[in-house]
Image (cartoon, rainbow, N blue to C red; front, side, top):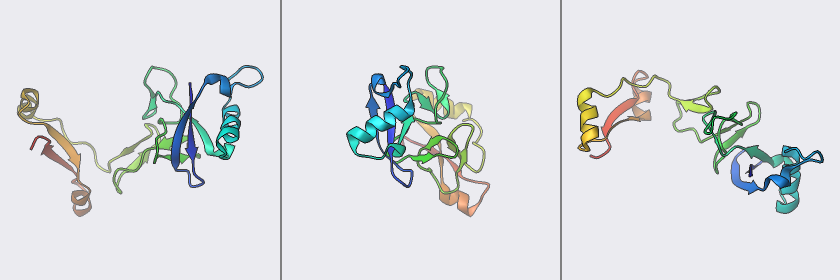
Length: 155
């Protein structure tokens, strides 16, 4: 199966459609994105240049089945197409986070905190707590050395 993202003129992903591989074969029986784009234009009344092929198995620039990653991430509704870098980006999670072209993911402006303590890990394992680090944009804006906050998701 071949997946194509329908994008707006502003590069926002509006929808993702799946085609049978036979619908994207060129005259030499080789998969060809432009054939799929023409097919989608004909059958969906949307310009061919606004259909971009995407890989269901690509997340954070890694192919889930060990293959070659394709365009950074599988496109999802609300994602953005970056034609310069050939990457589909999920929405920016926080204003301070920036794009990492290598991982095709957003990164916080400060490094992740240290691992949980042994006591916190034990509490998580016992099911009495669910200690996790959450990002607090307000805390980061007030003090750019802070941002991650340890919270108990069960509280």
